[in-house]
Amino acid sequence: MHEQDSLVNLSYLISHPKALDAEAGKMQRETAIETITNRGLRGFAKYGVYFSVMWAAGVKYPLEADLLRSGNFYWRYVDDVVDHDRPLSERYSSQAEYLQQKRATLTQLFYPTGELTFGDREDVMVAHYHSLAGRLGIDLTQESFDILDTIIFDEERCRDRRILSQKELDDYFELLDPACIKGALKVAREDCDPEEFHPLSMAVRTFFNLRDFPKDFEDGLINISKEDIEKYEVDLNQLEGRATLEQLLLYGPIREWCLDQTNAGLRFLEESDKRLERLKLKPITNFVLWLHFERPARKNLNKYAQMLVA
Image (cartoon, rainbow, N blue to C red; front, side):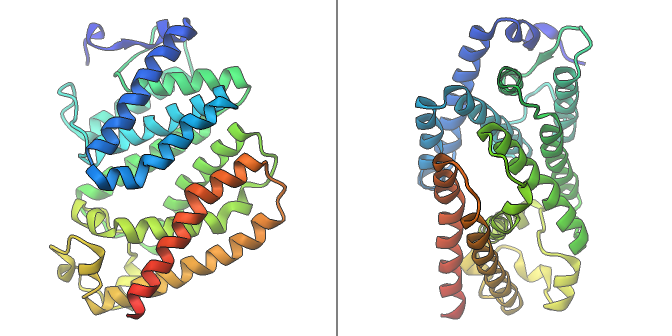
C-alpha cells in the first residue's frame, strides 16, 4: 500500500539502539513543541509543567523517563491526528485507514516474524518505547493494544456521532484508563494492585470529560450516556454552537448533569485519598500522582463546583 522508501526502517533502528534513541529523542522534542504551540497559551498552561517533569525525571531515571516520554508522545501524536489537531499524511485516505496501519505496525513490532518493519516517522517512538521496555524487562503489549483500541473506538463513534449507553461508556473508560495505569506502574516498578487507583482514575476522567465536553461534542464525541440524556431531559440540539463550558452551563439540563458529575468526581477524590494513603509508593510516584493527576483534578472540580452553585 505504501512505498517503503517513504517510510522509516524501524527494524534497522531497533537493531541500532543509539540511533533509535537519537531519532526518538528528536520526535519527542518535536511532538512536545508542536503540541504546545498548536494550542497557544492554553497548550503551555496545560502541558508545560507536565512535559518538563518528564524530562527532569530523566536525571535520576533515564531509561524509565525516556520510555514514558516516547509512550506519552506517541499516543498523543496518534490521537491528535485522529482528532484533526495534526494533519493526516497524504499516504492515508482517512483517519480510519491511518489507525489500521498503526495496528499493523504494532503487530509487526510486538509479534515479529523476522520480516523488516517500516513505519511513519512517529512510529519511531512506539518502536523506541517497545525497545526500552525490553531493556527494562517489562512487557507493555496488552496496554499498547488496549490504548489503540480506545482511539479506534473514538474515531468510529465520532463519524456517526454515536450516543453510547452507560455500560458502553464504562467499558470504554475501563479499557483506556487501566491500560495507562498498569503500564505506568510497570515502568515505575510499583508492586500494588492497579485497582487501588480506580477512584483517582475516575476523578481525573470526570474532570477531563467536563473540561473537554464542548470540543468533544463539536467533534462528534458525545460523552454523556443515553440514560443520562433521558434522565436529565437533555436536548442535544441545544448544545450546538456552545464552544465553552461556561456557555454549556447556560442550558439548565446540562448544568444539572455537570453538577452531579462534579460532585461524583469530588467523592472519587475523597475515596482516592483514603486508598493512596495506605499504599507504600515511592516518593517520585506520589509526587507524579499529586502533580499531574490529583492536584489538577481537585483544583478544576472545585472550580466547576463553584461555577455551578453561583
